[in-house]
Image (cartoon, rainbow, N blue to C red):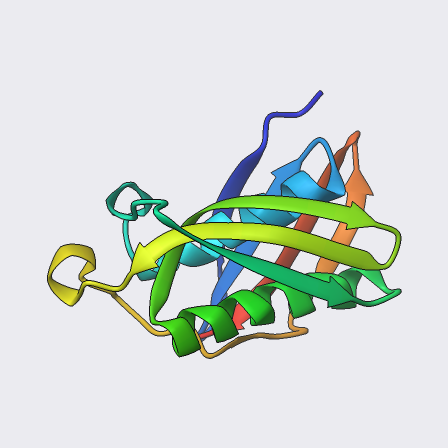
Length: 139
């Protein structure tokens, strides 16, 4: 069984996020952590507020970008940063809880604003017994 993890990967002007885990849901959670870590140090984000997110898309790669874009929308409209995610995927439906806190510019010192998840280098697949979910996010 694989250990859930996240990482960034290089892309010309933007930043790639990759989540890896023993399940598709775990890979989605890890990619969300990678995305939050572009903005600030995850250890600075207290998981004090919860937001529910729901997406539906038959194609798992498109479901992944919908998931990340739903998080970006919540961050922008609610002025929140997230550090904990709980994702459930049932067929074409994703339901999730994202936990975080309001942005505090002094505390979090946000490095960038993420504009959206793109289809660039979009991969959602099972590889060598673990799930990988990745794409480039526009910053």
